[in-house]
Amino acid sequence: MAVMKKKGNKSLPPISTASLPDVIFMILFFFMVSTTMRDQELLVRYKLPDATEVQKLEKKSLVSYIHIGVPTLAMQAKFGTAPKIQLNDSYKTAKDILDFVAGERDQLNEADRSSMTICLKADGNTKMGIVADVKQELRRANALKISYASSKVLSY
Amino acid sequence: MPVNKRKVQEINAGSMADIAFLLLIFFLVATTMNVDTGLVRVLPPMPDPNVKQEDIKVKERNLFLVFVSGSGNIMAGGKTIDVRQLKDAAKEFILNPLNDENLPEKEDKTIDLPDGQKWVYPVSQGVISLQNTRDTSYQVYIRVQNELTRAFNEIRDEVAMSKFGKRFGDLDEEQRKVITTAVPLKVSEAEPRKMTK
Image 1 (cartoon, chains in turn cyan, red):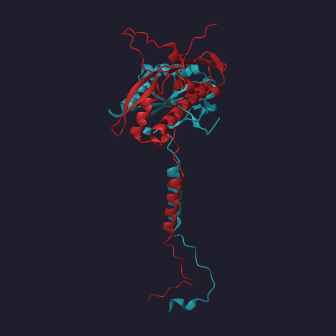
Image 2: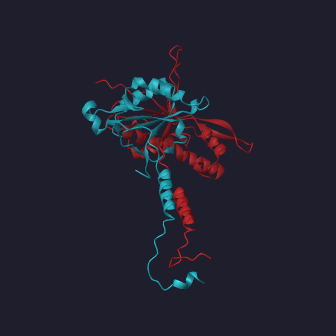
């Protein structure tokens, strides 16, 4: 065959780049799968408490978050180091939870409103006083399904 | 036939896509989304201020008071207890295996099984009341909540094992409902005590 004639030449062929898109797509898919979108910027720092009997929170769209913890380093100059409550993108007090829950509830379908869950992300070192205030306000706002966010450990 | 100018035949890249898909599927299966986990609780509804509340009388034998102090000490059922003993204490309270006079009474309840049969199970009337002060640490509080959940989960596992021969987690939706009716999660979270000194 004419193609096979010049086999004797030893110069290297150029590396094929045909598979490069595949590789890039692969990395893209990997990151798409393994990371979640960050929907809000955290203004507080917290380390969740440990627990063994945790349950997963299904249906992310039904979950609203309340963060409780020490302000981040950048915000400490302005707000000090006392634990604060973060709702959406700003520091709030327990009194604002009523409005927050009403706003979150409005965003849901009529059918889903009863299954709205509040995920309480609080630092392990906070005192129960602030958590109890939040709980009381949640009861007042009639948002009764809550989840105390904690990281899963196999044993203490 | 056009003459190929290349010296060596190009490596066939046709199967590269298959390899990429294989890897992709591997990552899809082996990695998980960052899921939020936590202890799920249902808060009691706020009492209506216009309606006069009748005091719900709970018999003393049906109440298991767990009190967590600000310094992290735990008092359960009238005596100081270590957090490691709490699960077994709570289990003994709920199950009342010897039908003790001082432990909660049981009420026979008829539960409909998914296959249409009836099942009579003595449902414990015990309520665990969890109290804390305002300066209790959240970590200790979660630890106590966790131990109480563990007690209930173990009881549910045992009941599910004897009834259906499976662990609670492996049951289907309807069987799970049966076990939840038989062993309800009764943890009442009271408002924190005002500590006046």
